[in-house]
Image 1 (tube, rainbow, N blue to C red):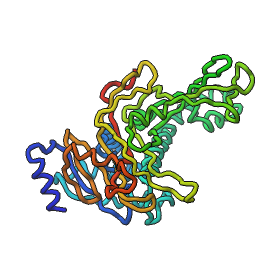
Image 2: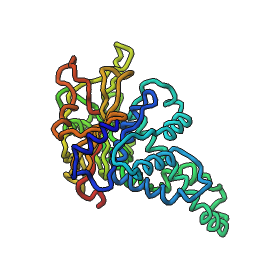
Image 3: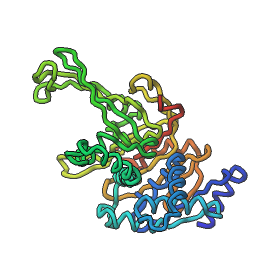
Image 4: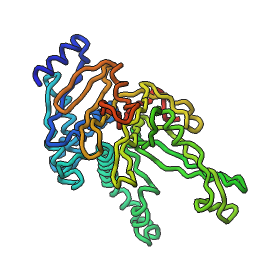
Length: 372
């Protein structure tokens, strides 16, 4: 890797970004799903900055308990503080902690990178929420003691559903969370019922020879609810035919798109990988949004790629854009690639193709403000 590292340094030459580090990750037996996602998150600058800030403010706390987040912060700090510009790091402590905490990732079987990303972000949110609640607890106790009638039913009610009533907005939410609105229009009285839900990533169904834009359009297409699927309209007080559609009410700062490449085939009784060609642009304009977020623009900065013909075996690598250069991370190996090479990961236009390297998780950063 020394040679590969120096090769990367030579390739970048005096264009090597000041203070940046490009390190491959050692593979501990099928941990490529973890390595590829961690590289994408390391080069998600707002996430990295917040995590390093968290590390700095918490490393002085001697009794701080080890958890997945402290292991991740430690790993990111280890990379950013390397004297060398390139090399290999073993994310051993993080992987050990992950396996200790979740039996899903314990085996040496091929794991799903999207499941891992989901688990990791939700775990970080849980840790941050617990810490936020722990710091506000004393205040709650002092304020509640002066008004005992307020806690006649105990603090259980707000705590049990605390997530809904008083959600703690963490920096993970500020970076990745968007809001979807599910609009249902009764076809009898025309009343529109809207229900909002939050998301940290969007999972999109895919079709052959399509694009992210068309997948997003399908995601927001109007669906008619009739026959057994009729909608209970509160105004009509009965089941009615209705039209339903999903739109993005508030786009996130970092938009994570998961392409549903693994589909359960009833007739086969197993999952099959869809190698469909799905074009993901370097610049994406979101059109299925609600006012005032019309035409929010995004720029692609990372792609987690699944390599292989089936869902239960294969390999994960990642493509990352850093300081206007594209890099290819394959476990220990890191190399520079041309921007034009990104399109070789769109997928295959024929079902049986020798190219099995397909974009699976896409990371886009908003080019404009997503807070209005």
